[in-house]
Image 1 (cartoon, rainbow, N blue to C red):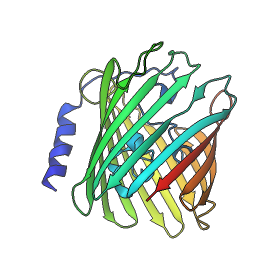
Image 2 (cartoon, one colour):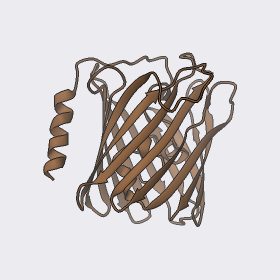
Image 3 (tube, one colour):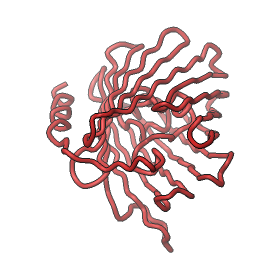
Image 4 (cartoon, rainbow, N blue to C red):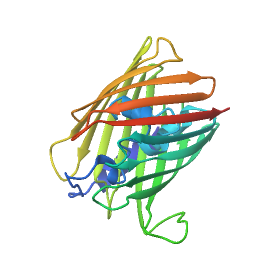
Length: 271
């Protein structure tokens, strides 16, 4: 636990007094995890403390240690793509308390150009109740004649996960988007009661006092068909999934402005 306390102290020390935010941008145009994963989006983007699937490298790299083996995922915005396109994907590997992850998220048709980020993550279990993770985020240049494994701008995320009880988890994601220090600090909690899972995220920007609120719920009374509902900082989200063995297909609609958007995701688990 000494390592956990040291990390928490470090996060408080490096928090700066300013950050970058552009209200007109879509939430996913910066190096933040919002909209990554149809399941997470169906739960209102309240996923920092959940982070138990292949998208954890984006949401909270510490969550990668919650499963063993290999997981792959891909998401596609399959309706109204003339507005914008957003298609993240990734693969993670976890074994005996250590995890590695690669992911990419790219948006096309947005005002900021072609925001394209590669994520490389590592996580380690610190004990029976805690884990820590680090993601390096590389913004790639467009257009480019070669594949860019890294990029021209590097930022990072630091994630922590605490699980004091089997049905209760707390997550923390400190996000660096530019320069030095932390621009966003997201605190999340997830609680499971029987077939219900509830989650809440509060994202605090360091340059203004108004936080963002994300609330989600998942009902998996029948595990092969989970149902989800959420509020993503004011926008309603609904989702449903189909699970069969190691294959999960998830659908989500978010009622954003000016029109709703639909996403479908595929996750494959290899034990």
